[in-house]
Image 1 (cartoon, rainbow, N blue to C red):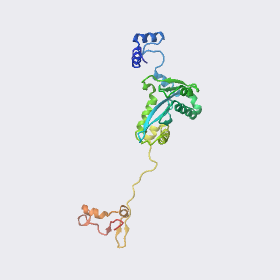
Image 2 (cartoon, rainbow, N blue to C red):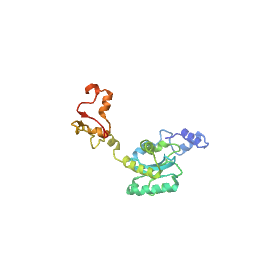
Image 3 (tube, helix red, strand yellow):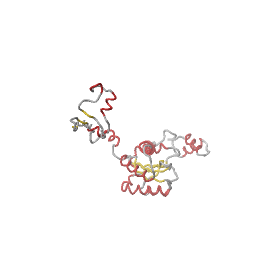
Length: 264
């Protein structure tokens, strides 16, 4: 956790003028021990201990082929690592974000009560009405510190995965297309042990090489290779011009066999 000097530095970035000693006195008066020997679990220990009851949310943006920016709201459960796309819009607002929270609560149904904490940043689209949707299920809202994305590292890793595995590989046409792509990727992402399955996956059918076609007799008593008709080329002529060995006359046309295309 942060000590009084780091807190003083962050306050200075925000334009708050205060002396380091004043910060120390406030912490000391509140009974907060100096960092790093602070009573209680660290943030990492808290996330590990309460993983089954933590839900995180964040925004990410995606560009379309028409150079339009779309915003995606994504949720992730810390305990199961299950992803829940909240919605796609070009203009996110507080009302839209609240509606996505309500949709998630309906989709989780009875499991919504298992989430005891919601981790989010301090974005303006996360309003009090948004928090009230989760607080109605007795969830506690945990806001990350300013410019501290590592406090929501699990959701940040999800955003990075979506970029590397999906958004950087697919040309998005519009909102409807992005919703369809996210829905399909959600089924893949939420598959149990998807990494192990993809690594050990084997094709259901084995590829077999086609057998060499049998020569077909021609009216003049010679034989013809049916593959030559499929490709439409005079194979023997090409081999003869190349002067390949093994043919009578130093690479000429083999005796008794005619290789010709459909127009021959």
